[in-house]
Image 1 (cartoon, rainbow, N blue to C red):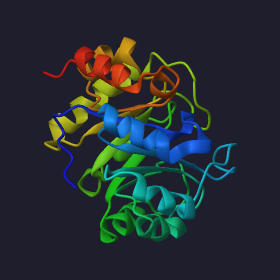
Image 2: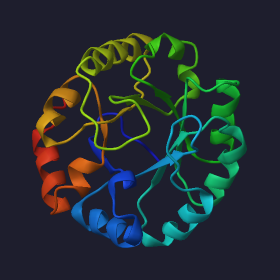
Image 3: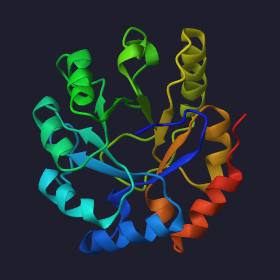
Image 4: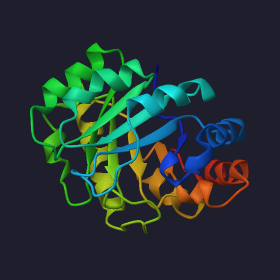
Length: 225
């Protein structure tokens, strides 16, 4: 799977979908123009909520041909990397804040054939990425505190996106920046101008049908220079 760092990609988050009919929800955003299906994986420890694991993801894999992107909000990601890859996940992101050896975790993801991402919580600085840029396929910036859908966008994220974009440019590493939290048509222009290219949107899409109309508005609002 190739991720174009200059293309706008929209990744609906299933956290805000109707869990009683996930396959139908996936099919609807697929038809509506989604590029990626975002899976929020929560363990009840790293974040308060619990969502779903590899067996559910494996069942959902037949619902679409779109790439699956698993955001692991879990304390011990290493033990779940292989099961999620076997379940059909194409992209896996892990938190910089989790204990362990991040470079080794990223290597496990890549060795399994998936794209490797690193996630930063709102209060985490970008400096922890500086020496592992060669091991990263994409970077996920949280614009809300993880664990719950429907939160308001944290405004300071714009400066963080700008600083990260500058770091990547200076390092000569065109790594795509993913953004998750309070993202929708109203702020797509601002966040894409600051450097975000993969937009994770949950309640903005699933809470405002028709889904294709929301994604159309996001594409029209994007500013990619």
